[in-house]
Length: 356
Ligand SMILES: NC(=O)c1ccc[n+]([C@@H]2O[C@H](COP(=O)([O-])OP(=O)(O)OC[C@H]3O[C@@H](n4cnc5c(N)ncnc54)[C@H](O)[C@@H]3O)[C@@H](O)[C@H]2O)c1
Image (tube, rainbow, N blue to C red):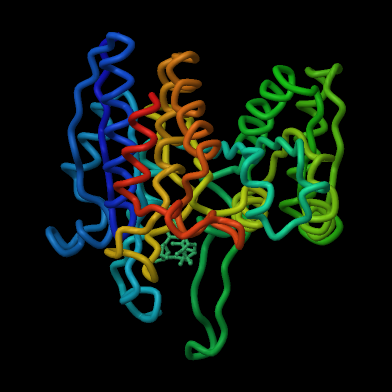
């Protein structure tokens, strides 16, 4: 298969882990006889430094010209602590989602058995949990009108959804539910928020087309509690942008670490595949970041954008092999991990590549 992949490492540990994700794709291409070509583009803090723009036109053009995008993370401490910064790395992220029409963010949450001990949740509650989140990505309070009143002493952000936005993500989630356990949980706050009432109404309408799927509604506060109490109760979950943002970070604890979770953002054109973690200021440059989420992002890229199931599984199996052999990065090590089994980014990357 001939495909063109754009690599966008971004900032901080994004740069470190994406190197491993790209090498994994190269190894897959060599092993399975594919012809993948690559290009690279700037985004985030590195792009602001180079051009003044967190998503320069040239990067966006390269994104549009590619078949899939392997993304790292954007963000820099200097903006996090400066609420007045006019240009920010995250603006690049939001613009990319809008420009590429990436309205659905898929986050599979599945725990490798070897990591049962690395989570802060009891193993017996966790074992067997397998959740697929659909987070809406281009609407909600992140994109509604915002501003300041009262000489800056009052601030507002508007939570806004249109019916078509809810409908298209609901359809993707129902479709996925049909290929899994035929169960879908829709999460909202319909007891309080008008936008959530439209959300629920619309999901109920879409449900008419999927009579086989058992649909359940939960309020966000209850869903957050249930996720920790009984994660096995969840199968496919669909929710809005901000609820999904929070809920999926919470769910990352099921997988033991942010460093183990990948996500796919898909919609109208090129799909973007990235770890769910950010640029990790606290560990950036130390060579200790876990690259597994980037390799798992590459696996999602192969499976979703290119339909290459065996290739995708080969990457997941390689990671499984590394974990079974006892190798860990710092974030997924526990009290029982011998010190000589804890590796840095490059060394564990090599263990993964050797097993592909
Ligand atoms: N999609 C994105 O690009 C994205 C997502 C989230 C946060 N951010 C940005 O990233 C920056 C840092 O944010 P944060 O600290 O809240 O979140 P973060 O995900 O970068 O880090 C949270 C914690 O998890 C650890 N961690 C994350 N990824 C890891 C990995 N691969 N291996 C080992 N440990 C890992 C970090 O060391 C940190 O302690 C901020 O500027 C934020 O805006 C970007």
